[in-house]
Image 1 (cartoon, rainbow, N blue to C red):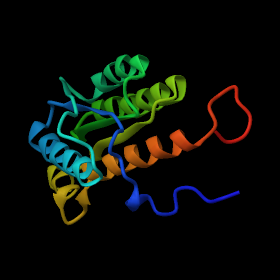
Image 2: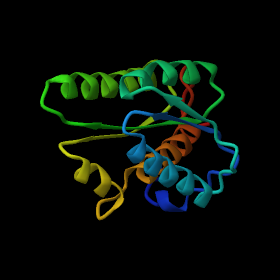
Image 3: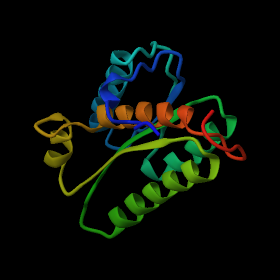
Length: 164
């Protein structure tokens, strides 16, 4: 049996369909993540017709991901946001529920939902991860979405035996 996923950088994503969900909260960070994600999709052959759905905050991302995934119109969904720790436990609730909700959508509906939601202690850390010295996590989330969409296309469909 062959190995799959060893050269993810070489994946041609032309013909694949992606949607992006982006949080308006900390929009100055999220817009940079979005630029990285859309740039990465273009580098892998995806056209400019990728829909971007803006939500108020990271907590609202999972319900939109669920609605989009349920249509089965997309090979993968890219979820982008920035949750920056404050002086209250609000951070843990928002970050944890966002991550868990996105994971539940992917598992329940079988559509990859990549996690490009920054969870940082400070604005400086967030800026370092959206195009600064830590790279762009939006671009990484897009690469993950491309890789997972390509892998799932190669795997057997549920209820079948062997490779298709």
